[in-house]
Structure formats: structure tokens, C-alpha cells
Length: 367
Ligand code: F6P
Image (tube, rainbow, N blue to C red):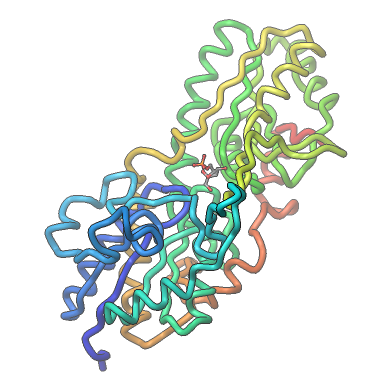
């Protein structure tokens, strides 16, 4: 038996990922079909926390708003990884920044506008905020989004497959130019502190070296792999470097750290390229795929999983569930406690069969 007719809000937070619009479409159509009302929150929670910049905190999401968006990258709601409501930056009269908890304001806005529940589509940061809102009395369902695939308790997050497919295609292209010029090509991919994108795309494209945060690398081992290939008349090498990769005894490369924002990683690939150039005398080039991995059309896998996640989130509300995240536990979509999803990061297990496969096929992991 269905519940009373709900008024629900959706938000998208953190870095965008291909499939966000498909989730939104599935949520809106499933909810409207039940006779519920749907609203969007703009740019994370900004339309609530920075009201002076917006016409309204919640805007109606109609059937018309979500027509023809399944295949589109980005998010029709907008997103941000600034202005975290748990640590909202407020400028004090002396110019310094104070971080303030604004979650009470968000709960108050829901109450004021008679919104019954929130479907929060996000990665670890956004789902931590969602969990805090839930503990303050809001009914919340989470949907796991991130190209990094680092959320706990779900086998996969939407966006990951598209990022891996694109990275694989890029590495295929780099193979031919690397071979033609007898060069070492170093490719840096996103993924934050987890090596899922580097590992899956690197194995799929037969990269020679894959460096991931989970296995701190010894640059001597990487150089030895390049030279071993030289000796067997393979005069080019493809090296995939996760942005969070770090040398043994060292740390990951940080590009930028701003108050109230996660640190921005970057530069790991160039460091490896410079060292390999010095150590082997080979011509090396480094390429950063960066935000290209987040853009574009979601793959069929990501579209399907996004639509399934969105519909499952509405089903969860219909069953009066609360504080859960939709998760893929193949072949089923299930519900797991929201706080377990964010309690620890899902990194690549060192004994997983993708790493074993790489080792058996001669991939160097820098160890
Ligand atoms: O979490 C997704 C992600 O793309 C990471 O892989 C990357 O480190 C980060 O976001 C980049 O964030 P920004 O959009 O702030 O550059």
C-alpha cells in the first residue's frame, strides 16, 4: 500500500558525474506517477543557504523539466563542491573565515515549504551532509554518485563506467602515438585517494605500468619496466598514474587547498614523467585527463544503473524507509544504511582479481 502523497526534493552535490540527469529523470517520473510533487534544490544546497542569489529555495520539477535528459552529462539542478552546509564559510568583519554548521537552516526550509523528504544524489561529502540532515529529523534517501567509485557498501557508483570507458579510449589513442614516436606516455587520471579508474582503464587498455594510491610506488621499478621493454624492442611504454598515487615513503600530490573545500589533487603524472625522463633518457610526455572524465554522455551501463537507482530511491520513500542509500549488489539494487556508505572509503583491495590479472599479464604496479 502506498503512502500519503509526498512532496519531495532532490539535490545533486559535489563533482558532477555522467548519469546525474538520468537519476533525476527516474526520480521525477516515478514520483509524479505516484501523484507526488517533486522539487529541485539548485547548486547543491545553495538555493537554500544563499537565498539572495536565487528566486526560490525549491523549484517545481515537472514532467516537462526531465524530458530527453537521460543521455545528457552534467546536472539540470547544478552542483557545487563549495559551501558545504556542515562547514559553511562565513566572512567575519576582520576578514577571517569562520566555518558554520548550516544544516538547521536546511531542515527549517524543508519544514517551511512542507517538503516531506530529500533524495540526495552525491558522493561521500554530499552523503555525509545527507546523513547529518537525517539525524536532524529529515527523511533522506541517498543515491551513490561519483566517477571515483570510492563509496562503501555499493559495488559500483554511477559515473564510474563512463569515466573508465573514456580513459580506456584515450589510452588506446595514446598507444599509437607512443609507438610511432618511441615515447613514454604518462596518463594521469582522477579518482582521488582510490585507484579504481586507473586500475580498470589501465588493465582494459593493456597499459604497461599502473600506479594507484593503494600501492605506493618505487620509481626504480617503473624505470626498470621501461628499460626491460627497450631491451625486448618495445620502444614505447604507457604508464597510468592515479592522481592520488604516491611514491613509497612519500605523499600524494596536492594542487590546491582552500578553506571549506576538499584538497585538489594533481601533478602526480608529471612527477613520474620527469623522473622517468631523467632515469631512462627516454622522450616522455604526460597527459592529464582530468575533468574530461566527468563530462559527456553516460555509457549504457551508467544510464541503466542511474535510472534503476532513481526509481529505487522513490520506491524506498514509498516503503517509508529513511537514512538509507540505494546500492548495487548485483544483480539487485538494495538499500544500505547511509552512514555505512560514508563511514570509510572503498579503496582497491590489494588481493582483488583485477590486480592479480594485471600481475599475471606482466603489468608493473611499481612495487
Ligand atoms: O570526486 C570526483 C572528482 O572528479 C575527483 O576525481 C577529483 O579529484 C575531484 O572531483 C576534482 O574536483 P574539482 O571539480 O573541484 O576539480
